[in-house]
Amino acid sequence: MVTCYLRYIIDPSKISEFEEYAKMWLPLVAMFEGQHHGYFLPSEGANNVALALFRFLASLPMKLTAMTHSRIKSVLLLFSL
Image 1 (spheres, rainbow, N blue to C red):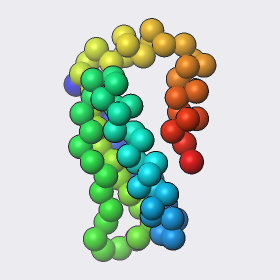
Image 2 (cartoon, rainbow, N blue to C red):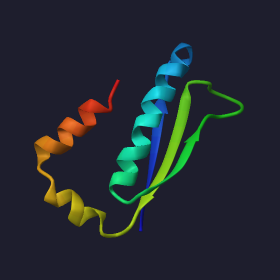
Image 3 (cartoon, rainbow, N blue to C red):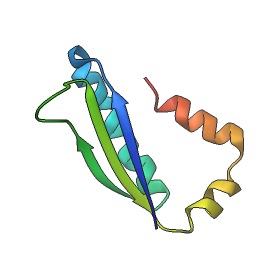
Image 4 (cartoon, rainbow, N blue to C red):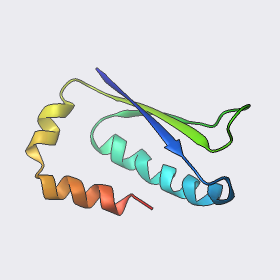
């Protein structure tokens, strides 16, 4: 199993845009049979940091190698702000 940890630096005035972006990842993770554990915002300290956790089965690398580099790049561009 592979667990991914993402750390985002966000603009506190654009929380709604980040929320929209974050929701786009849910079906993408599910498409690769992953499990999304959610997004986390700190309750104290910096207010511009968000964390995301999700995991995949060990078979994910084989699925990713079946996709071409350009398809991966297209998907990532589609889901970026």
